[in-house]
Length: 169
Image (tube, rainbow, N blue to C red; front, top):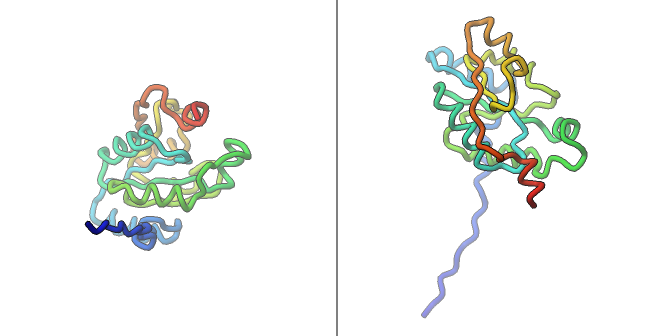
């Protein structure tokens, strides 16, 4: 009996990269979405050591609108926020993971400590964050609320965070 050989294929990174755009590139896409009256939802984070809680946040964010944009902290900003041992996975790996999720429409990697510049530029209709934040702690809340948008806190999955996962390991 002949053994079947499993061919190892790598991810089609070119296909995944179509969702990963610079801020200036994303403005073209955003203009089209807004001209089509699409409701744009924005969330952001490090998404290092991706887990079910991240997936839950992204899915709950997506169902609030038509298009979901994820602001992804670059490697340097994560190191400054979480310490020199982070990120565990580099921004190329983290953005590839996010882009493989069907309901994530666009990923913008940013280098600042906060996504305020992104939010001011893309002007989303809704910002979401996990419920470990309070509304007054959400960066960009004033900019979105002042133009008639909303800030929504998504309930977290209890005891599920990257930091907890790393402690367990």
